[in-house]
Length: 399
Image (cartoon, rainbow, N blue to C red):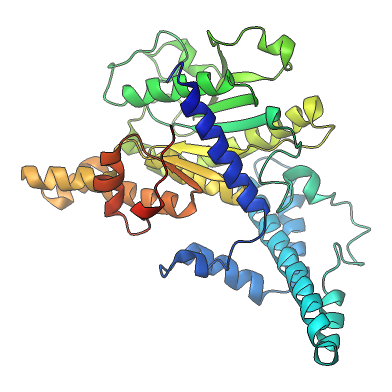
């Protein structure tokens, strides 16, 4: 990874392209994008946007935002309701634009429609303007500016990587201490270092689990660790106080236990809550440094392995940000290999490896991702090709 500047540059180009396509607003309907595959999540969003009045959606966001106590406040609900409300507003704006286009063609038949649509597309309702609710776009970005950093310069990218399992630290990695601390841990740490060293990248956060269990080094319990890159010096003097690469450890699950990757699944939502708070806070902080006070949102949220993939899916959906996914040896391929060995039944394999939960997470991550990163041609043709949502013809090589 280190020294492979061409690959890193290709990766950055890919995520920038993904951000531009998301901003462009030229995507087809949520349902049409499925290419014939039904997505319950997208169907739900489309039904909510279509079936509920914009006023009700906005009031729901206000109620979710009103909880002042951290114990009562549900950050994911707050972001989800704001996102759905904003999508409803965007949908009506698009309807207004379409109505204007049709009016030029058929002014006699479309005048009534354009007048009615215009009445429903106000930014805020007159009855809500006096409430001390704040502007949601200040906290979370909107459907266009939230996709990539609000600054237009390419040299101010904020990138979030997620890898939840194993013992993750920047130096003196304990590779091989257990089955979860191996090649993926080394890969994501070196990847974060290489990205943070690249011109055009302001900050990289590698989010993982905070481990406070006994018999483990204290370094795994540190909330933040700066990654020192050998190829980029004096970054803080050249960029800013919060620039560079960092390992950010989010507490989730039992505080005094080290959990293998198969035991992390029940606690993914807890991680998402903590990660969401960190990303929102850091986006504001970076914005104060380089964004003229406007939050600088991640250019991409990149999940590594199935558990991190589902976390990235939830985060990218809540914040309306592009998502990338790297599978690191996929569940369907592992399941087929174990079944061929004949030592365990499908039920026993699922009990041991939580394989069906893993496959489901990979399917959802594939569905939500703008970019899927594969390491080899074999992974594309023999592993990803087992998944319904993947099309080999769309594969693109990052050199």
